[in-house]
Image (cartoon, rainbow, N blue to C red; front, top):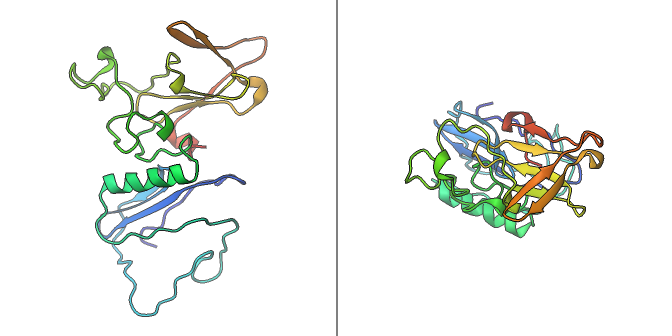
Length: 220
């Protein structure tokens, strides 16, 4: 149907914040933990409901497909919703459910806990002069920047309790991510004065998988 979108894969025993936006004759989009998983401009049906039409939670209205899982909160907003307001709501829910290290409220490719401004998609980290779009554009990278992984800032990595790297975040704004879920293959974080690094070893086959928003699907 018009505005029908795919949400992607949901991992078991995982908390998600989902958001669906529909603007008649413009665009429909769906997001999980802030990152848009699907969108379409084929949104020319009215979704306004009148009278006593039934509303169903936990199943398709035809009662053919059923949801298996828990739902903690539902918010419905009507009318014109600005992007800024939308980002604020996402951020609020991320804080409420302890997902600041998972959610990217403004969909700028950087999760909230590591974002300089989690409700402004044009500002996530101060860009060094050499990588800026212009000398005065403190927060705008050059359009040529596709990937920027730097370990100097502890904010750029997510470590486990053994100082091993789970995620290395991309500061380019393109939403890439270097990840490793296998404990045996995680490289370690090395803090050394003003410059930190990530230690790889061929003897222990340490490796990070570099994934793009398209291959990652859902930031998890």
